Image (cartoon, rainbow, N blue to C red):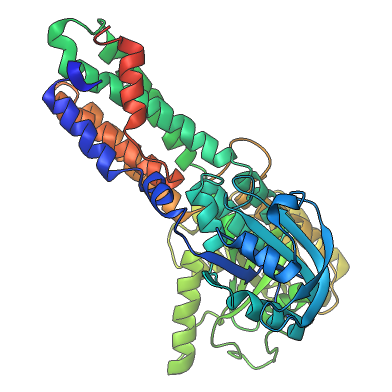
Length: 507
């Protein structure tokens, strides 16, 4: 194969082949010699049924020793009711279901067996001790079953991350996003980009080594330029997602902020439906950040109550104010709580008064622009206002431009809560997006970092395109490496295949 290659290209591809794709090398070298692992795969604690999973070359031994079954006579993936016994003493440990999964048609790609037993702690402990007594069988490390599935090519890295997110999902939206990622949609998107980039790199490498022999078609580099530019635009558009997937995965950071005694802690308690924070008529009661996780319309929210913002000689309260401002700077959404009894009697002055409150909370001269992006005004204590006054305030706010959405409510009586929750849920959903529509979103900070590096590497290609084609090719290679680090697939074999298929060199 390498007879018709230049020495430079041959060395470059051979070196790449040695230093990349460690997954295939590890799996081929270690699969046959790997330990057999076991672990409790269901949740810890007392339960009706517990699942103990075994994976590795000694799985057939575990099947025979504990259940008295031979793998050759056991129907794969079929549950069989058996006595589970201790191979050392032949003592009956339990009676349960046993399933045999011969490799490579198993989760890990290896021979596997599952014991579905009763979930009492003594039963589980007895079965685990019996498995541990078998030669070549040891307890699994954290995540080792999934790691073996990845090495076997059963899951890509993004799918592995989706599986982890699914296990930890606490809201409906998180579950939907994790299922979509585990199904491979995000990995397919990145793999498609990798394939296109691999093709571009192969064409550039071929041009470098064979253009002088007139074996390369005219205009091949122009095609590469166009493909790289299009790919760069797609990557940049993918990165401009407003961190929706990351917010959905980790929770929307929502901060309750405002002046002292505006009702911030009361709002927190009302949303949580329990007394999370101390409520007192004494100003400055809350001095530290109080956090709690909520499910708002199926979306995860990390809600933080903060100290009232004011100038104070108290050193402890001053630290609380500093932490409050720090949280506001980091917030995805700020609920600015205002005591509605402090609104000016002349309702025409309400907009400027509220803008002043926003400037106090946001601590910025550009409060108006920032407010429109990430604030929601909460006018509390509406129960202390006359009915006609509430209607007039709502009318003034509806006719005012330049302010964020404002909701009047009473944390004391609950009036206005339903309307506030509708607006709040809409804001949170906008920040997270719909996990089932459009292209799959970024979910991991590491994805974002590698994709940003990829964009920079493509810019390097354009910079060196007419100066030094070898350095331009290195930019493509670096971009491909960063994509491969997301999916776990980086190799040189694909480049070789494309060179020979597209250009028929040596034919």
